[in-house]
Amino acid sequence: MTAGTPDAAVWDGVSTLLDHYIRIRPDDRVVLLYTADARDPAAWVAAELAVRGVRPALLGMSAGRDDTVEPRLRAALPDPASPHPRIVLLTMERDSMSHVLQLRRALAPYPEDRWATYRVINASAEFFRHSMGVTPELLSALNGALLNRMMPASRLRVTSGGGTDLEIAVDSERYRWISNRGVWRAGAFLVLPPGEVSTYPADVNGVLVADGAFNVTSYTGHDVRLADHPVTVEIEHGRVTGAACADPLVARLLERCLRVENADRIGELGFGTNVGTTAFIPLNSHINERHPGVHLGLGMHGQRLDVVDYWCDVHLDLITADATVAVDGRTEIRSADLRGFAGERHPEPLTGNVHEEDIDGDCCGLITGEVARAREEFLRTRECRRTRATGGS
Image 1 (cartoon, rainbow, N blue to C red):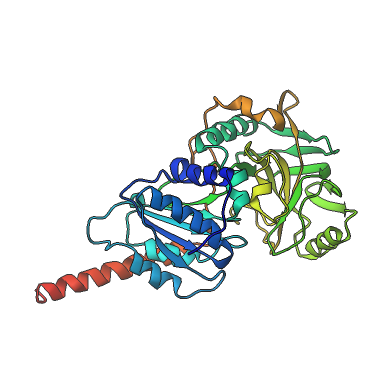
Image 2 (cartoon, rainbow, N blue to C red):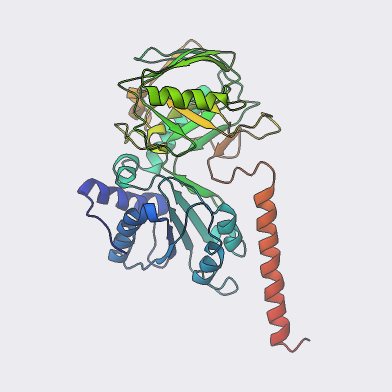
């Protein structure tokens, strides 16, 4: 594995990933899986691990479909029936998030507190420069500050320097909040880059002027920054009634997205909290979504389908460069002042309708079923081995 030469800011980000997010230990069994478009970032991480005396198993993989991932990963993992150190699974991809079921099935024989999985999307020099400039502890405080103020509220008014003016109804008893702060939780796949809280808005009316960037769930090589040609979206009762952009390529993208069934619905209200992300980048990425400000996600939502009962094949995030939020007409939160909340406490996850973000999205039980089948398969195999070893007695 070879790699380009990263600058000091990138190396600092690599160290932050290992020290503060993964909390690497000398005896960890590390498996690093990477796609071809993330080869260099994976090499930087492998080099830093080697400096620390940790030699990861390196597994290349194809994005999308790769039937070899599960068997090769099983071969790289320790015997689940024997004592073993903590397993650290780190995947790095640039434009995709692949092989959820294969990874889950390979890990099924191991207790959930004996492995930790970290999934880096948008793996690049920009990821380390912009997304790894803050610690999970700081993000926990910033996310907590927003959750502690917004969850009890019923109304939010969101404005921005670019002209955004939105009246938003919040129903935290019905719609869960999702917090991505980079904190590992047993059994979950931690998604990076970190730094966001989001929910489903009970109602939205007004105008969004997205002058930061867009992020869409399909490949685009277009520069996604919007400072020179903001996207203006008119919204009535949670549905898009008009959208415009002076850039013809972005305007065409908007038109195509809005033709998809349910893509005119506001499926997400999100607030970026990664104060280390100080600029927008050209890449279609979650890095931009974590920039302090507000974003509305058109199309698919992040709620359970028994709570929000529509599906959409598109999710388009439209992101502002800044935001001011008035909570129930009183408390104001400014994106430029987020660091001032460094002393706040984050609500306990999985209680009070706050959920950590992971990649499963197991709305129909598919992944749970696959994991159960993989675990049963392992137990049957182990029992057969024991029976043979004892001569069938």
